[in-house]
Length: 166
Image 1 (cartoon, rainbow, N blue to C red):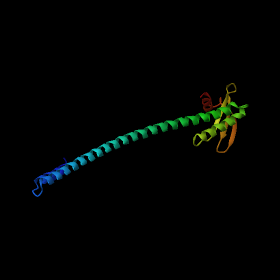
Image 2: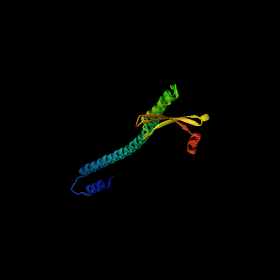
Image 3: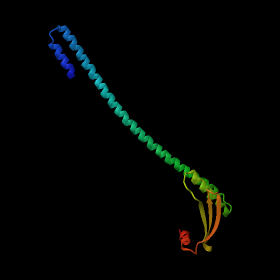
Image 4: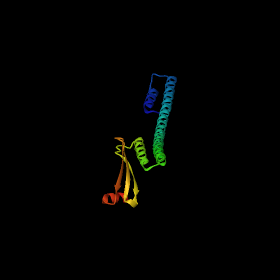
């Protein structure tokens, strides 16, 4: 029994102005109150336990959702990259003459922008003609919409030679 209720029960038993029936009624009421209080305490503890369990389950569910969301975002990014590559491939496969390489450079540039690659100065490709010791450089500058085709001899300078070897 709760210590405070026990003190009240002891005082009732020692009281001289109460009949035995009155004392019994009061003591029975105190026991019922103690039982109800114990039941309430048990329910509260059980509720707190359930609350904690649900909290842990919710945290685990949130973590799982975050992991799944991150995986989906990664997969979506990979699909975006694959789609961009397919667009570039389609243009590259439709090339009919060397100058069409400028269109490939343009598409690469637009696809990089689509993929949110920042600060692209230019896109260029080089077609090497080893027998001549030169390459054709095809360039597209997105910011200015400028296209350039430059013939570069690479056998006459170490930097150009290094570039060609790489």
